[in-house]
Length: 118
Length: 111
Image (tube, rainbow over all chains, first blue to last red):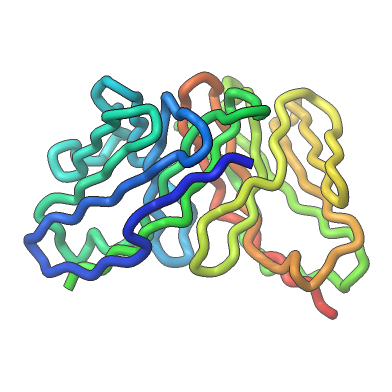
């Protein structure tokens, strides 16, 4: 299957600082990437859809000025959590759509980034 | 509002038996459905996807879709202790849609 990486895998930051998370498709070009958030013992919630070369589409209730998404190339999307607060502590997971031999609607997930804001 | 419902479990199945996981969805516009397995603290990994009514088999796994009943299921044959995990059902409207996930079913395979 397609390989998606995320960096960093874990990050601890102080309240008020910004954190950038990278999502890369390693062996295929992803025109669309998705960002999800998962709180403990909860399911994944879609935050935004990121399309290469255009503005991200945010889900209802997700602040676009707080969660900045950039999809500068077909293999890289970044999520920046600005002015982080403890309630932003969560597991952030990206996914990329497509890949060689896969149907266009398959999504492959990165390993996730665990963010802790102190 | 799109919703995907799953019984959170835990669902306990003896080793070697068939585990049956169920999922219902509210959005009739959903076209594709996915089953993911998630181990604690890890990211989901894709097991199967299905978009046509009927059954789809892949090794020990069979996905079933009934669009009239808005029902999706996953059968795991010859269950192994390593199959113990949370299984997430997700639906998509297709195209560039993100996935709508259920809360997941915690499956325990008893040795």
